[in-house]
Length: 289
Image 1 (cartoon, rainbow, N blue to C red):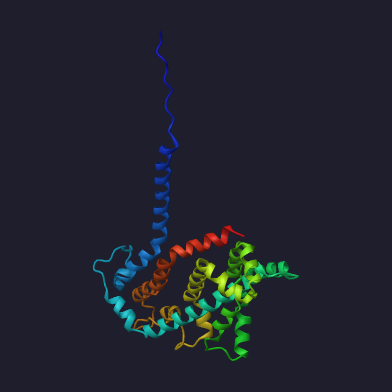
Image 2 (cartoon, rainbow, N blue to C red):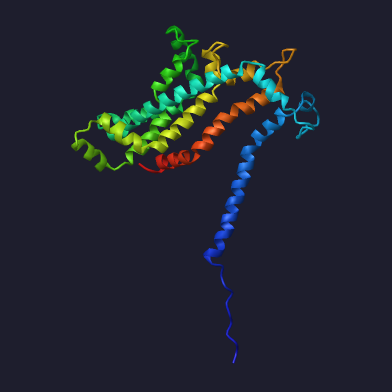
């Protein structure tokens, strides 16, 4: 009697999962290294001497780390003053634009009115306009109003809301059950109170996401501070690019690299602190509604 043939066992789903997990982690590690590459290159450049910076072929690692570049970056210009200007403008714009965008998004999501949909489409269409097209008209408008060399342009921009943030808030608010709003109206709440006491507390992940995004927009902006502010009131991004010079008037590249590495630190700290809420806010506003 012939022995029964045994068919080869197929790999189960449990055996496939470790391979998929390992592949996903490998892909994430590779992408993380690619994204971290420019920052690592920046730190290495900040630790080089001027001779190592211009050496051919290029040297990746410095022979002796030159930490004095960071000390020079902090003392060669009024670093604390420019840092304070950047922090003030970034926090001011982030707070104002987050609140105004949340209010507009709440209106588009929960209020009823004729022409709401065309207005929302018109609002989103403004995202297609490159910022460079509105730069000169914006400057002329603020110059005629006497707001150049002041911080008022950032106040106006913050109160005007952001189309992208309005869309994000609208998507989140539209996903909140209508029964919650109806119960508040029955209890005598107006829409202002509903927005401030019910919808805003529920939207903490989106609020934090909006704050982080708008903070980085202002923190990394170079054109607006260079155009609207004088050298004494400008931000750190402009100061780093313009005020680090060698005795011959040429850019001091290694000191600039050290200052740029310090310049990135506040944004990294904010993102690392808020990354869990940031990711939650992006997911909830992007998939609901």
